[in-house]
Structure formats: structure tokens, C-alpha cells
Length: 154
Figure 1 (tube, one colour):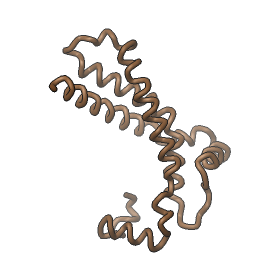
Figure 2 (figure 1 turned 30 degrees about the horizontal axis):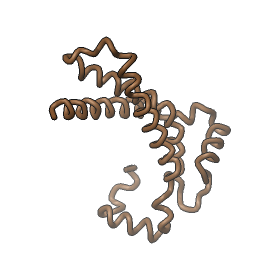
Figure 3 (figure 1 turned 180 degrees about the vertical axis):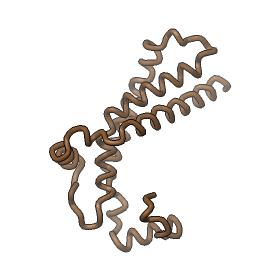
Figure 4 (figure 1 turned 60 degrees about the vertical axis):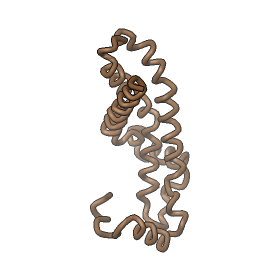
């Protein structure tokens, strides 16, 4: 949560009520479209390529002793790779959600992508990429290790 919003709401329900009263129910869906694109793209690329990377690129780490290292490498590399493709949609989502009520700088996902690219250049669409890629890559690696250890122990 941004610092300027600290103390503004008592709890989640209070926040929900205030947002709906001041901005309407539609405010709850601001940024939904780029969020769906972002998540669908990331999950498709991550889960669509994870097994290929695991099977072909890291076969030398097939030793059971190195299985956690292998899972970490797979999760990290594929997580960073998938983030390359979904990062522009994350920027659009953040821009749409940070607009003030009544502001219409960004109206649709495509319009926002084109506007940011045109006015700020393509690099602006990957703003915040490094921390996002590290967070998603490491997070998925940990999740993958936990999942595989759970499956192995069952």
C-alpha cells in the first residue's frame, strides 16, 4: 500500500465500502483486463516451457541429490523468461490502477500499451523488470521445489 493511503481505511471492508461509495462498483475492476493478460501470458509461458527446459537443458542435473538445485534453476530461468513477456501488461495494470477517479489517460490495454510506447519509448513497458523477474523467478523456484518434494514424499 502506498504511504499516502496509510490510515485511510480501518480494514478491508471499510476500504471496499469507501471505494464503492466514492467511485462506484466499476472501480473494483480497474486493471482487470491487463491483469488477465499478464497472468495468462506468464502462466502459459512458464508452465508451457518448464517441462521442456527441465527435460532438455538441465539433463546433467538429473542426479537425485541435485534435484532441488535442478528445480531451482528451472524455476528461476523459466520464471525470468516468462516475465520478459508479461512485464508490459504489468506496467499497464499499474498505470490503470493508479489513475485518479475521472482520469482517462489509459482506457484499454492496447491503447495503454501503444500510448506508453509512443510517449515514453519501449523501455518504459519493462519498467521495474529486474525486481519483478527476481521475485517471480525465485518465488516459482521455491514453489516448484516444494511441489516436487511433496510429490516425491507421497
